[in-house]
Length: 265
Image 1 (tube, rainbow, N blue to C red):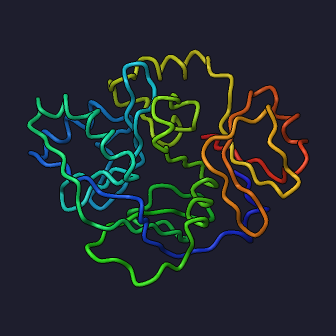
Image 2: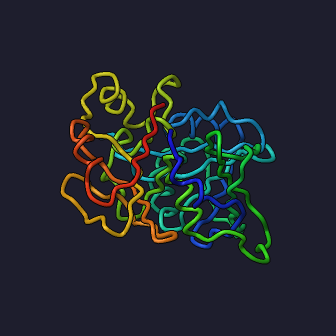
């Protein structure tokens, strides 16, 4: 993943994610594990204590209904996610949770996001230059040392897209890079798994999810379907977009496009 033009935009530090929250998953550990492993797209058994894992949940059509970070801490599982997705996630899981005697409770804990040069134990995504992680705290941090724009930009550089409520049910994992970061193709069944696997192994998805770095001469183009909001830092715009694979050479030549970042594995 090439990020040469973005190096001077990156800043390390922490911030309180004010629009994020924590959901405690309450029940016997084995029952909670069985519920998660049978419903979420990631492989929960890979989590060690104090580790974080990107994940998501699909409907039976393979469309992503919510995304989140699973945090395994003190031998219990928690969801960390945007507040606007909390009720959606609980409603998606509740019909299955009752069979495992599992309940969900919104926590008052604060979510702290960090950008660091080195990977920490609770990092959920990283490359050779930067890492992102989350932690939870009963108290608020005294002051943010990075902005929300820096946090969002760093996630975009790493290929991480976090859904907004308006995105629910609009995308399948392969359309927004989740097959590389949030989906296990080895763990077995979960809701929507057959469709997701079919798209991957039959190669039916002819589009690619990218991160764009542009300057102020860029004008939105029909070749690029913008996903989510644009982030502005130092007169540059960073945003995610979906394009047809065979239009890459054309998109690279669009006025104002300085760099295109893709996650290949």
